[in-house]
Image (cartoon, rainbow, N blue to C red; front, side, top):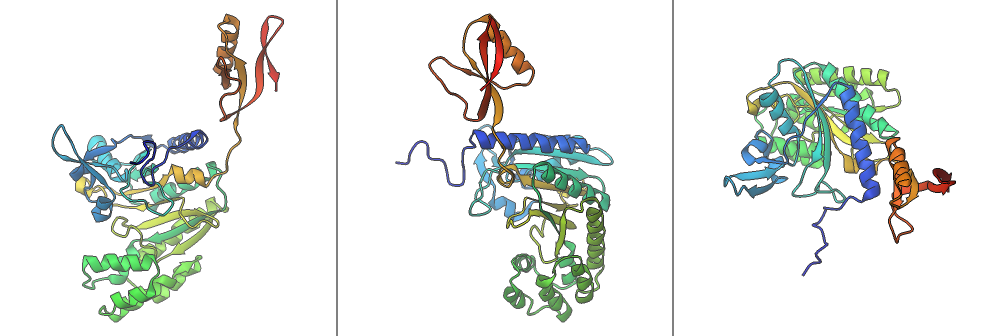
Amino acid sequence: MPSAWLLPEHIADVLPAEARRIEALRRTLLDMARGYGFELVQPPLMEHLDSLLSGTGQELDLRTFKLVDQLSGRTLGVRADTTPQVARIDAHLLNRNGVTRLSYCGPVLHTRPQGAQSTREPLQLGAEIYGHAGLEADLEIQELALDGLRAAGITGLVLDLADARILRGVLGDAAVPAGVRMELASALASKDSGRLNVLSMDLPAATRAGLLALPNLYGDASVLEQARRVLPAHALIIAALDDLAWLAGHVAASSPDVTIGFDLADMGGHGYYSGTRFAVYSNGACDALLRGGRYDEVGAVFGRNRPAVGFSADLKALVASTRTEARRQAVRAPWSEEAALRAAVRELRGRGETVVCMLPGHDHEGEEFDCDRELVAVGGQWVLRAL
């Protein structure tokens, strides 16, 4: 019989030091989003499954926990991604004309972990802009993401740019079944040239040449010019390369500390993204700190096909990439019913100080805090004394 305290695989308690850092980062990033004009929303943790998975495809379906509602008998889903819910809020509940900026932060639940060390209960924070199809919105989202990571104390940022339209442009009018398209996107994402060679065997020569060229199209800005030479001169490809160059130029001007790279074979989320997409890394890291891009079709299933661009990140994973902060300084105080002492404690807390009262019979409490001062009685008055 398993131990009563044993948690499911890839599910863990968040202990005080980490919880403090996560909460501080959550406040910092949401306050920064508000400074950009984003409004906070809080979608429910679960919904009717047909609504929750509307337009999200098979991948999200496989990651979603299902249960039966004992009130209605209908199947419910516990959200595995908040973005479709925010799209529903924009389309149906707010139903505004013009631009709407929304931010959110809350837990999501996955049936399987995304990686060997990943949690199945990420704390997802994100920001979305609805109603503007121009690159100005893409740039604003990328600048917010970069500013947020800087505020988290992460340095050596690397912005990796890609575009979902490139694969569509390479395939052009070729008759490629949806299943094969997904396999091609997967092979490109893993840069599996052997698999690409097999999958593209029966495709037109120009299409096949473009597919086989994509795995090598990664690196600095020179990649864009190389792509113009070796990829088909399709309108989608030209537009994608022009947009990537525009974004990279503006980010380079506003964020000279950020290294900008391109990976034109990165087709993760190919069926979801509709245009430019990006990921941000820190130097030497294998996993992205956050991901985002343009997904203009996300609201179509809700009857309102609005332009949309955004990003999301797992705060638990993000905190693991930040510096460990020193313990917060605090005041140690004895516990007593004496009115003067209790008034002194209230006054200090009202000034923003952390005051840890030593409960009767305990000499030490609160490992999360560094008590560098204490309240002591001197001449009938309670005063602070350095420890």
